[in-house]
Length: 72
Image (cartoon, rainbow, N blue to C red):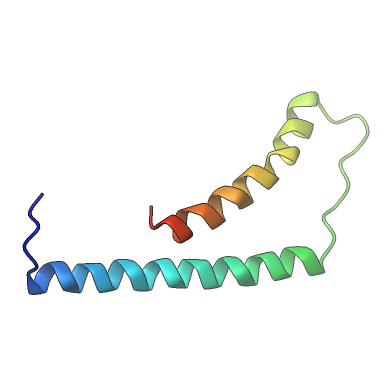
């Protein structure tokens, strides 16, 4: 990895940062939408795997926030 700054590297950095900010803004809209509408309830006879999958949505939201914030 070269530490020299080139116009191409600066151009790619600006694009990377812009896309990260766009993703973060879209995520904020998604979270507002998700908080304003209630999710449908799972049926009582749903499989354990389906219940675990539904509970893992919280982790997915954490990861969706962490990626743009950390620049990953």
